[in-house]
Structures are given as C-alpha cells and as structure tokens.
Image (cartoon, rainbow, N blue to C red; front, side):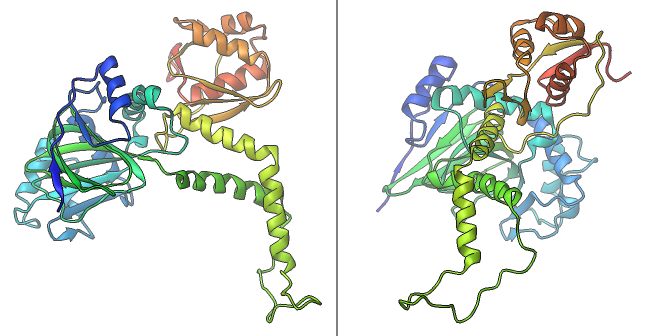
Length: 405
C-alpha cells in the first residue's frame, strides 16, 4: 500500500535559499518552492504566446484536452484576436457549447522561440538555477499550459527527465509518484511557486479552477545525450562520403568464408569503418563543442529564437553588449563564439580584443572606437564579420543611429 506525503513548502529562494534548494532537493525529491525569483512571464505574456502559437498555419504543438480526450480539430476553441486576455479566453471556453461546461486544458509545446523577450527571460531564470546544479549538455524543453477545472486521469511525464513547473496564475495540485518508492507526494502550489520533481517520476495534474503553468523538462539519463551525438556523427559521415547512389542491397544467401562462417557484406564493413574513423576525427569533437556552446548560451532552452536580420554597420553605429557571449577555443587562433543559442566560428586573434572590450565596457561604444581599441581597421572584414554575428544573435544591441531608419 502506497503512503502519501505532503512535503513542507520551502522558504523563499532568494539567492541563498535557491542554493539550499539546489543542494537539498534538486534531483532528489519532489518539492514546492514558493516565491521563486521571477520567471519573467505573467498571464499577459502567456496569452500572447498562446495566441502566437494558435496563429501559425499548422498549430501542431497545440493540444486542447477535455475529460473525453484530446480534440482533433479544436479550431475556434483556440485563443484568437477576440480574446483580449487570458481571463477572457477562459470565460469564453467556460460557456462554449462544444465543451458543455466541462473542464479543459490547452498545452503549447516549445512556444517561447517565437518571442525573444519571453524566451530570454525564461532562459535567465533557468541560468540562475544552473549556476548551482550545473549546465545541461542536452536540450531542455518547455510546455506552456492553461486550463480550467481539468484533472488528469492518466499518469503523464517522461520518467527520464526532471521537471520544473512554474505556476504563473491560479492554483495547481500535482500528485507525484517517484519510481521504486512506496510514497506518493501531493504538491500544492499557487502563483509564483516552483514545483520540482526528479527524473524517474510519474505525475497527475489537477486544476480546480483557472491555472496557467510553464513546465520545463530536463533530461537526466545518460541515454539523453545519444541523439545529439548521433546527429553530429551522422552529419559528418554524410559529408565524408563518397556514398553510392544505388540502394543498399545485400546478397541472399550471404556468401560464406572457407571455414564456413558468413562473410559480412562490404557495404556494412565500409560503413562501420567510416563510423569509427568519423568518431576519431577532430571535426567530431568540434561539432560537439559547437553543440555544447550553443546550449550553454541558451541555458539549454531549445529551440532558440531565429537570428534577427543583418544591419549594415558604419563607424558611427554605437553598440552595447546585452547578452552573455560564450567563447570556446578550438585552436591557437580559432574559437567558437555563441550567444542566445547561436554559434559561429571566429578565426581572428584580434577578435578576442573585441570580445574583451565588449564584456568590460558597460556603456555603448562606436564601431570606430571599438576597432581602434582592438587594433583593427574600421573597415576590417574580420571586425565586421564578428559584429554582424553578434548583432544577429542579439548579443549586441545597436543603440544609435536608429537601425530602423
């Protein structure tokens, strides 16, 4: 027989208490942490993100569930221009004849990348925790949900991932059942609280009234790293080639050796040799470093917003560093730079002087002054290549002249 445990609410995690949460509860046991440092999303932000997701030509990441299951074509029940705010949307669905007064839950998978401001605020909230527990080497994903009087009936969740759930609005009760224990945790959270449970857990969500949440799933099993590693290796294998254009066919029956053993077809041994050669190639390490640098600059939050359009810079433009810039050395004069989830190679030793000035100058600086202090010409292609990528990734803001004029 399972026992039920309602954990005590932890003290408000300003920096010392956030450290205590990380040291005492992270990846160990389910817990509610009240009054967390601001997530950076309020109900208005959540409403805007849901409307943006619903406005996409094919809103596949949106799911509207009722007590009877997931609606295949929610159509007019999704947030639209007529819903001025989240409260108005909840009120509209409460009287929607299609739902018959039943409770409902709308979830949007990975909605943040459409809004850089919202994405960056959530990224910063995650970074505050990662500084204590370590930075994720694999992508973390986010799910935004709003619901009213909805009770899960089937245990959900990825047992291979830890969960961080911020309650943006309303009240949420979660029943969490960690694997290999006889204990069921009942976690009650209100707006501003953070709910955490470790990997290896199943859960049921309960909303007695309107409630909005953002849930971040953090892969925690070694196998989680297989996908990015295989992506890197397979991409390099395709580039190494050459690959025959003919279909892969094997003889039947398979030929045998003189001793009677089956002979492995050459197409298979060639592929195995290409795989081992690729794994040992320095390019594979470089590809994995690029993957990590991008994730580190995004605090793992994936996908990242698309880069902004290129703005041609002149010597009069003033620039200000507004985001962390990650640098990973890959050679004597080569490095990978990353910011806000985007990675690019830099092959210029003088670029390090540019980076140093941007990191240490807390006021905006003209392109001309930046070039002069870095020992580069104002028209140096190396300088403009670096600044172009920094501006596109939003690591550097153009403060004047107005780039939109």
